[in-house]
Image 1 (cartoon, one colour):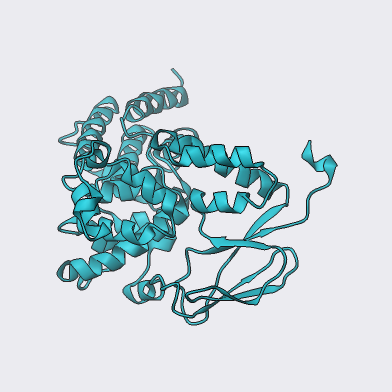
Image 2 (cartoon, one colour):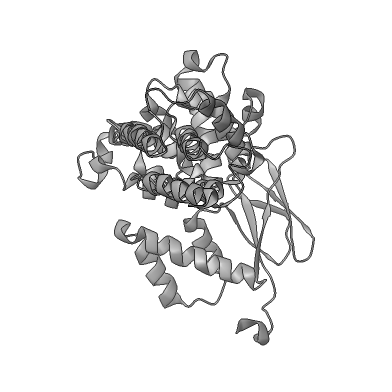
Amino acid sequence: MDPREKLYADLALVRGILEGAFFSPLRALDWPAFCFDQPGLLGLEQEEVFDLAVRAALAAETIHPASCEGREPMAWLWEMPEPEPVLSHALASLRADRPFLFHRVLYSLGPVREGEVDPEDYELAEDYLTAALAGGTQLGAGADQELATLTRRALAAAGQDPDNRDPALRGLAALVLDKPQVAETHTDAELLTWLSLGDGLEGVPDELAPAVMTLVWSGWCAAVMGAPPDLKLLTRLQPGLGLSAAELVQHTPQEPGAGQVIHATCPFCQQDNALKLGSEIGELSRCPHLIYVGTSDEAHLLRVLESFSLGPDFLTLLESYYQSPADFELFATIVDDLYEMLTAQGRLAAAPVSCEGTLGFYYLKAFFAGPPPDDQSLH
């Protein structure tokens, strides 16, 4: 057999083993699910992950100050003695800003689904959430065992003794993980494609390439699952998470009634929109295109979509999906698709919100409705 054909066959064999992991495809954005041991946090979007990470880090510093001292914010989260109180505070602070995310996670919890905890028994939402989160799900433990088992199996298939592997493998895998393309991979499946069919293993001896691919995959997955935590690699995968303690303070969510003035520039007419926050929203300047200020949460996007000609019956149907946990995924899919369609047509656009002296409104967007498109663009 041609040497290159044998190499591709060996890589395909190892890849087939690794792709059999129950957690594959593993997303780089799935790390909160493993950090907090909650499957309900799988499948988050980038903005949701950042928002959750900021709020959780701030809560961790308050609840577990001793374990945070001398470390960076991401390390605070992976070193939490008890993650449940931290996550409960983060979720409670998300109720108004990301209501769909809040309810999606809430109804993923077994004690909530089974009616084992009653919110009426708790004065504070944080206490109710802590009780609902208690015990975890052992998601991380199961994934860690699967990762270790498949790594050993793939190494054996690559011709290596898992307990006495070639000493060169670790260094070669580290060199591959340091390549800039690794930071651009969104899932372990993308990583394996780049390694087995792209140039990811360029410079690696053919006889060691399948084993190196195994260790690269294992290292990437371990960073996402925290088995053990690899904050250097994780922050390469998501650079926005590499906040210092001083930078984190700038992102502290602001009280909506504190009187700040937020600004957003209209993408259609370039006019500055200025709103003063308080018990009531004061419009200092507002263009006719501004329709809503909120987050990318699907519950907020539904409010945005109400400004378009969807029809009252259709909106009622969407609301009914939102009220049914079994239909959450359907609700999100329809809302996201409608939002993307209107954006692609140029009828809807979003702009970031700023406030002088703070980054505390990082989670807000201003949504603008533009002129209707030409009929020809609707086909």
